Image 1 (cartoon, rainbow, N blue to C red):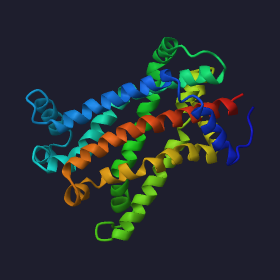
Image 2: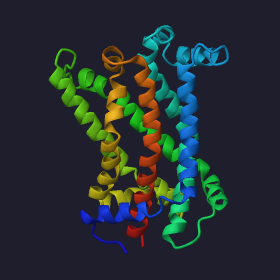
Image 3: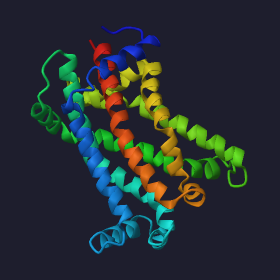
Image 4: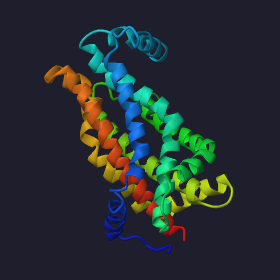
Length: 284
């Protein structure tokens, strides 16, 4: 029943998703993802282990060789930990996140259709669409990565707007970057639900996912903005790891990573649940 979405719709979408909180099946893929992230975090913590050290040295040396040596010194390890962990997290998510999200989405689809969700059936459905899901997610995460990596270079070198000696300009540019990131993510919020629930070719399903977001930009932005605001504090703290290390404790950086991993499980649950419900309501 496609319809105009009012502010009260957010309460309805979150209410419908909250009703599914007690269903363990929905949490399993997200907990698997969290477990993988925990392993990555521990690898970046125990870098002096004889088993882990060669892997991390190779990883940091290939990705950012100019920071690799500093990473193996205390407390610089914790200053650079969010960066190297974040890059490793993105690489792993390129391979598994869309698939795990696809399982959760398919389980939500069954529930919202009034059917009994079958975990292995949803695994099979997501597996059949694995390459479609991965390709789309690769483009989405790639676009967000390029945006967040080169935005400041673009502002300074292409636009010619210096940020080096202007803290207010820098803060304004960071605020603008966060806003653009939210808008880009919001435009893509229904792509995975459309791939799992839509009909027709996979290209037509991608188009339909964009169409739903463009028709309802307010709700698309809200479904991204609300989780973003909830998770902003640990994310901001990790982006200022040097301040955390200097003013508090280096170990706190690792605990903030653990908090962000746990928080992501909850936020992804509600973001996927609300996105699926909204997409289904606006596609029938």
